[in-house]
Image (cartoon, rainbow, N blue to C red):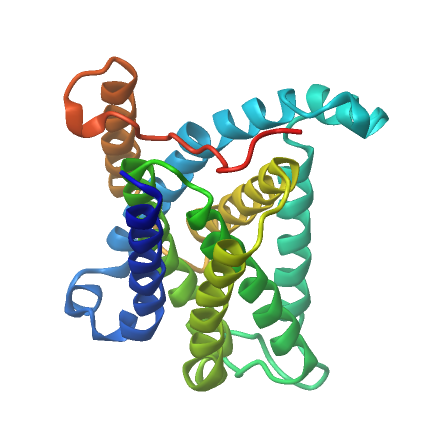
Length: 266
C-alpha cells in the first residue's frame, strides 16, 4: 500500500476511534448485555494486545537505541519496560488523585467529581489519546493499523465507561469531546511532523502502561463485577490470531503486530 493510501487509512482509523467515544452510549448491545461480559472481553483484548503486540515492539525498539544516548541507552536496553512502569505509575497516581474523596463528600462513585482533579484527569487521558492518534500515523502496514485500531476501539469502550462512572455529567458534556479532539490532534501532529523512533518507542511504552492499569482497575476491582470466562475467551481469540500470524497460517493474519516507524533510526 502506498504512502497516500496509508495516510488515508490512518485518517479513517482516527475518525473511527473518535466516534467510539461520541457514539458509545448509542451502542444498544452495551445496555442489553450485562456489563461484566463486554467489559471483561474488551479488557482481555486490550491486555492481549499489550503483551503480544506492543511489548515485542518495545523490546525491539529499545535494543536499537543508539549509543549516543549514553548511560540511558544501556539502562533502557537492560530495562526495556521502564517507561511502561513509569506510564503505569503516572496513570495510577492520576486515578488515586481523582478517587480521593473531597472533604465533606462521599465516594467518587456517588458524587460527581469536580474541580481541578477533573481537568488533571481529563488532561492525562487526552494526552493518552493523542499518543494513540500519533502512533497510528507511524504505522506502515495496513493490517497492523486495522488490528491496532480494533484493539484500541474495544479498549476505548472500557475507558469511556470508566470516565463516565467517575465524572458523570462533566465527562458527558466536555470530557468525551476533549478526548475525541485529542485523538484527531495526535493524528495531525503525526502527519505533519517527524520525531525520533526513540520517542515513538517511549510513547508505546507509556501507552502500554496506561492500558495495563485500566485493565487491572476494571478486572480486579471489587466494585466492578467481571467475567473470567469472557476475559479468557478474548485472550484466547487474540492469541490464536497472533500465533496464526507467527506461523503464517492464512494470508489475512500476515502482518499482525507489525509496527515500524516510517523514519529510520539515526
